[in-house]
Image (cartoon, rainbow, N blue to C red; front, side, top):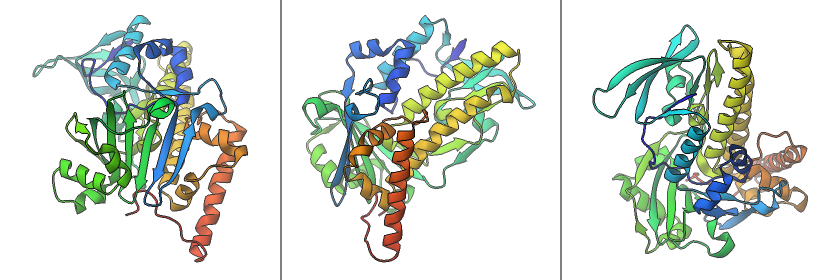
Length: 399
């Protein structure tokens, strides 16, 4: 296997918060104990605060359906990704760093390789590599999806984001000190991710229209949005910014297909969802594992895998994106958000924790029941609100 990486590791990357249901996969890869030994921040739960009403919910991962995944990690991606790349080398992968994939080589509808540009200099050496199977893991570049015209923006999630890291944020102490904090209000929502006792990753996701209402640089926009949140303002009071504010816009999308003749899409190259439930790394690694299994089966059967040989991967990726997208849309829905800000019934509590902790692939009847009760209750609240019998609180990003 040839792994081509545009950058040279270690390198900074956003997306530091893992989910508990990523842990079994990390164990299967043989890297879980290494991650623990590295000393990454342990994450035992997630806390959601809804402003201005200040309703809140905490997910305690120890209360999930699977007692073997009571926690996850908050990771610095430079170290985390480098560790995974080293593990790939140890398992026999040939890794080319500092090598850009300029395009996929496509003949008809079949991917047959890639055109590479080696080295960071200009123009760099260009050569073609032929392959029986191409797996696109180019992240939000989505190189093959864009080349084939498969990328579609999500019409319901037209958001933008600003993010940085700070030192000295006022986060929780003790066992809950590693919890991710999500603060939602009319302005959008903030994440605060403790990376260690001193450093916190901070970001805000908001409708793109909000940026147009604030005339100014990204630093001033970030500060204006912080000022709109009492919770975040209090926690960042006196904190020192460690990195410049970085911006990204209009970032939710997916490809219409995730597999075809001679190719597979994984991670953000297949689709990217609003990160409110920290689903990115888990969806990416789960789709990567699915691609590996599909590739192994397909290449055993034939020299040049057809689209039908890889259809199982397409279904797998679609299931995960669809399930998480439904929960994300719920976060922005006033009826669903009002339910999230309350403690779920005891008979559903474990299923609720598991659903938001990443149990989206297994067909578990307890998760099905939670979904049925949750979305049915939200529909009833919407009907009551439509008849004027109930006033729903503002949902995040409703301002």
